[in-house]
Image (cartoon, rainbow, N blue to C red; front, side):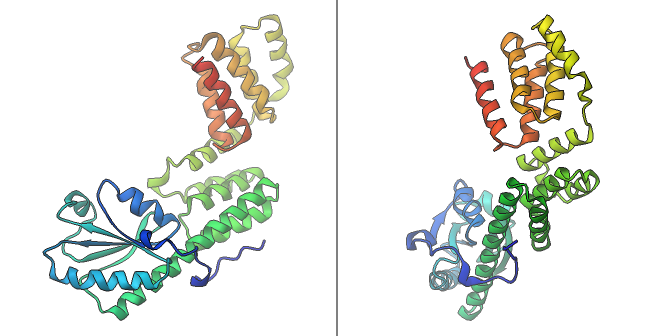
Length: 309
């Protein structure tokens, strides 16, 4: 394991952003595009101001100066509260100037009123360090996922656990650690790990995928009926119940492609059978396998070709 998450190191940040991107005006409509999404890679400072606000005229230029001096470690977005009252209400802005700092899509720091340039520099430097930590965490997650793909589950577990020490609510680390525990048949700890998911993130696709995988692991299939079901299908190819049961058994033995084909046969022949049971089961497989799994991708292509033929 080469990735060690330690103290923030501003020297290891992302390449400096283009000058034109460092500071910009934004709005309620563009807040996601200009603030939330960019903050996942570079910290974003949001300055809530208004043209009639005297302290805003003092703070704005000083803050812009310090942001430019940071050479791309942070970005700055200016929001005119008069023109974006709904956003100001959502952010509970009660007086201006008000400054919020976003990292990984979440507000992590901020202040109200005008500050001297020395304090602004401390604020920006501190924020730039958090950005470096975020980048380090993303690199660690990438390394852990690569280790898991190479079936080095122990190494992946160590890195995911280390990320969680630095960021207890990191969805990627929670999902990754639970996936490792499922791979090792440590289902009790996998269930415990998933309790770390923040309520607001329970429907995250990665979490839903791991939960579906855990459900399959908690309910193992009896593969002794595979031969019997195949004989039934050979006698009557349109025995849809036998095909559905067989698909579940085949998935339990890791034969994902054949499991997919059994369900695709049903969908192609009679999509509405048993309240679309075949399609629903296939979607459940996709959730368990994960959105980027090769069998999920291949299965979705087959499903689309049938549904939209």
